[in-house]
Length: 129
Image (cartoon, rainbow, N blue to C red; front, side, top):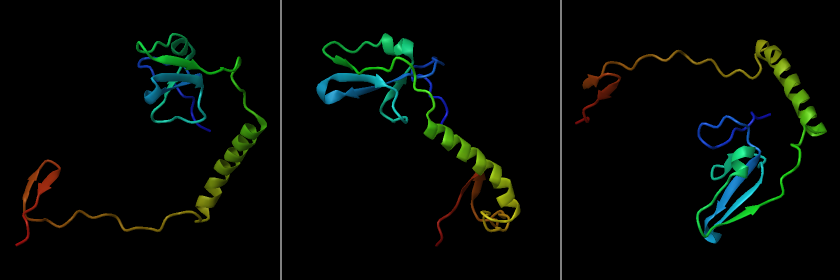
């Protein structure tokens, strides 16, 4: 289960209830219910910022129907939560038995001293001749 998404407006700590998408080709802003997952080119807005949305002159705002009440968890959500808890509880037993562990790697050693000048954490190497 993901964390509650916050409003995309800076300094706003309210939870998001709507998603804003711009259709630049049509000069349209589409404001609708909160998307299932966060998109990189969409903005999640709280109730206050969704209600006070303004767009540039000449643009159109398309407001999709918003649900009156936020959707509560359904049976599928509760089953998924129960499965996640069961998996988390089973992990320590699997780790003790050695299943799912990565292979043992030797500890990393520092590279042998190389020619060059060292500045802080960087090293300038000369080109091999």
